[in-house]
Length: 150
Image (cartoon, rainbow, N blue to C red; front, side):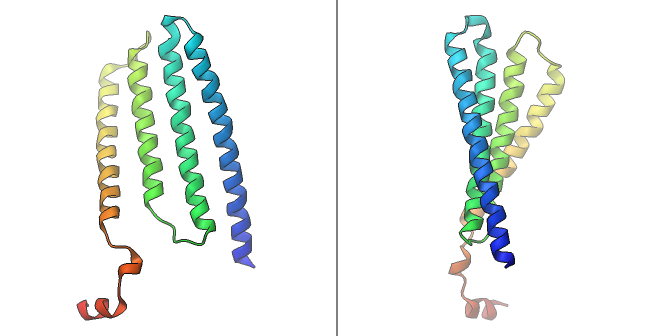
């Protein structure tokens, strides 16, 4: 009974995530159209909005993928969440750098510090993803081999 309730909740979350992704994709298409038809002075602002919207779509789709894995009964994996975090950090870095190029640039020292911290987070996320891909899968473990090693 609880398994079916969990699957219904995950299904509803998945549908909502895909609906949100489609809405943001539509929004990013309209921003792209505005960017193409805009004058030269405002195209960088539209570029920032476009990248922000597209990366948000990527994050939502990656979360929806994780929900689909849960619906299939697979073991919850850390890698999709790390990828979502990596996309979010890169998204923030792009927003900061595009904001610095604009006419109302923020405090440069604060931005450089934040970019440094975000760069360190990217290195940690990429290293974590690499370590997860290097480790053997759970199906590769043999219970008898583990017992002899312990």
